[in-house]
Image (cartoon, rainbow, N blue to C red; front, side, top):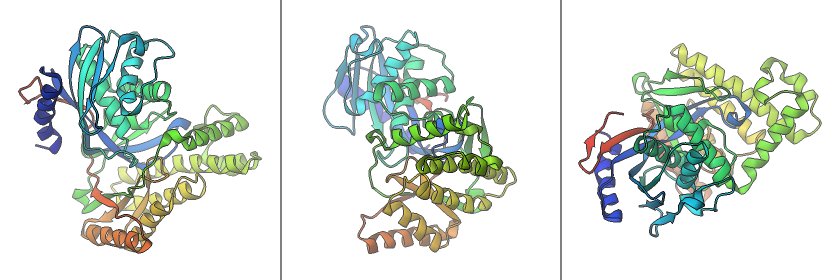
Length: 401
């Protein structure tokens, strides 16, 4: 039994303590790391995330009065209560802090015309916040799945991902792409998810690290990032300007072989750099998929490091801590390393031989200490399951995913 399954009875018990009633179940949605394919999702491109064993758990019960009550074990404070009028219409009442994410899911479901009433929800999360591991998507998808089951909406995982993305875009105000929510909703254990963000077609690609004597480490730099601060939106707008200048629907439509010609047509050097990253990153995703399909996991290492250089130099979303993590890992014998997530802090992923995992981690930690940085948090990324229902009512009885 995983830590997530062990956590379901505890989360149900906490629900009873907060609300004085029984939950109808406990649902889980994971954080994710992105193996390759950064800032391509809002450009209709290719991405390749995998789910982490770290999850957000939601214990929930329906309410007949339309009221939404939210409580988080990790956020501090009491219950956030929102009435139906606050979650209706094109300009809903603003919701502050973490509660905006689940509130946005309810709003998005109702805006889609779905018969969602009220609910009591209690959350417990092991997904680090601000670390580039999609804690917000885990919170959104856990909420969407719980409401999907409570109200018998019959939505498929891809539809839940779309609802969660709309919540973050239109309610919270972060113009994210679809990757994080799809990873949380659709990933399977032992696989990476090769996703075409244009049509949401995806394929589960075997990623048996342990079987090959490998590990994928996550290096959480502990530098907090906030994608709502405008930097993310600026880069998205720059990509959209590049697509308009090149006369394409999205940068996905610029062929890798034609990139030099496309770059020559762009006058703005900042836009040119953004376009170069997106087109080359899409190509790197395809190369990684080809290597994994051929059973060559080690062969993806140089592609990871090349992706980091592109994010650092062309997309300008790295920072001193991320560059140090990647550089120290590569110098200590890693097969490859790169930023994962939105950058500006957050985390890196490092592909290593299993026997080298501890020496590489020690080298990164020592490099941070020498630079005067706070010690990073380093842990293995184990390809894990996506969102699922864990338990029924107060008994903690396992439910079929």
